[in-house]
Length: 144
Image (cartoon, rainbow, N blue to C red; front, side, top):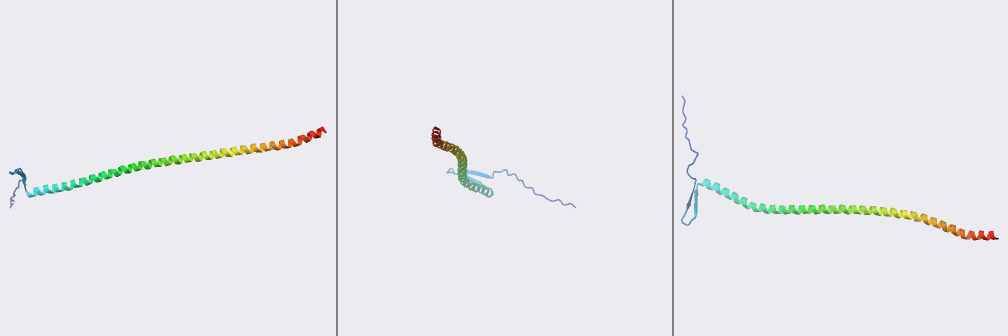
């Protein structure tokens, strides 16, 4: 024996308006709706109000972060320029050091050449002194 179950159906489409608006004698608009819909709308309004209040704070923080990033970029550029200047100074000092070494080597060569010339001049002086003493003696001996 089969038994049939009785099923109740319910329609899900609502054809009537869930929200009704009225305008009173003072010109105020009144909105009428069910509690569940009003609660959903109020939750959304509170959430958006909270979000909107945070938006200003986030904009301020974003502005501060942007300024911080800009300052950091400027600092990086200045430090890079400073490092470049230090590298140039180091290169210049190394070049000056090389030039000083070359100058010292040239001066050492000049001193060596002058020492040779001084020895040569001393030899000539000694030779001329000996010649000036010996030559008159030889001349006197030859004349006698």
